[in-house]
Image (cartoon, rainbow, N blue to C red; front, side, top):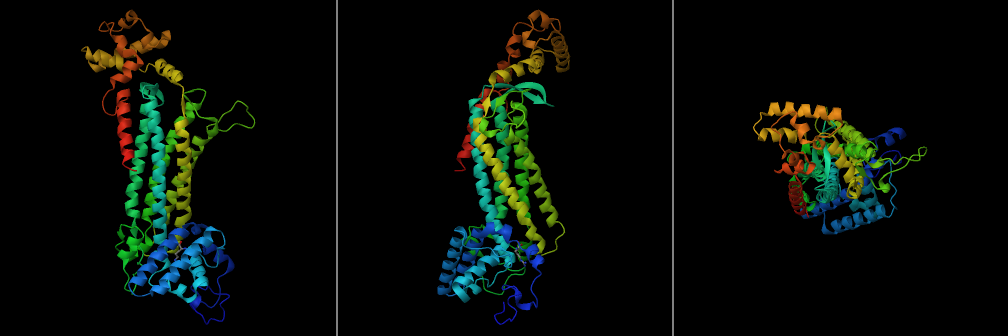
Length: 470
Ligand code: ARG
């Protein structure tokens, strides 16, 4: 930084010392990140305050200088928050914009803040702090959605619906069991974000440009002040790797995959062909041409947005794949995909957490669908096995009974004992206990099974887990 340069107007005030001409106007805009990295201003200021606090402790700043810097930075934050700081493109990024504003305010002392650090460790610190905050918020939203699912599961623990494989009616399950399946997916998503948080939560501050710094800095102190678990181990790695952001996006992709699968089911279930549930009007929209339409826009959009999150994951993987150590400008490209993943996931979670508790279940329709689809056929086979028939033979007997049912347009439970006995005389009056839908779900009474008692027990355990998060 030169104070005697006679072409100050054309060179950058933050790094213009060795330059003899200003940056091309297009290149200036092309290389700037301020338009998207300004959202990390709070993290940037917190990082600077921690850095300055440490510099004072090790004797590089006086306590008076530290107070000026802290006060100045707090003012800069206020300026940003009340909209009086105009971001400057020539100042490139959030780091230099804030530092320049600080120097405007407090003069020469502001120029001492950057001692012993670089934008390379600064940006790595900011992103980690930013992602950490967002993980915490995302995890709260996952929890809110899980609360809704568990509530529905308890309310609909005895509500019967057809369970599907290959989207063909397979065996009856309870709606509560289905909701708890979604809850399990989200439970793992929560765990994944928590696990990712451990690797996010390490402090690269002090790695400086790439090799560390000649000043007697205390990296443990800054790590501590910023709530990081520990300083990172290697300065080259610290400023260059963005694996933590990739890992975050990967957890986000899986979360979106789960939301997308749930969306697909909600979309099917609201169709006239299934007609299993209703979504409240406030989560749907109509058609401008077809007056009868009520479209499940929220699930459809969530399903669609999964594509962009997956795309961003691939962007970040590709961004990283051929970078030599240490920092490269390529890494500036990490932010837009990362931020869009964060915004997208938060939006989808919010919509889902608001919508799920309002799902209205059409119990009679689901029951009828389960009754119609020979969904208790496996129960009849198991019944024959209990009476001593080998399973393969039982499978054959039931297959023939179903064939007869299709011909006669009768479900198994609609047949008379005589009709059933055509296929095996092992069948007696007690068969009707197993052919009912209730009998079928109640019989699957072990951990992980669909019996209402098990669904309620699973919901109880799930609620306990949520409790430990508070
Ligand atoms: N805006 C840059 C980024 O987002 C900050 C770090 C720039 N460092 C540098 N040496 N140019 O990565």
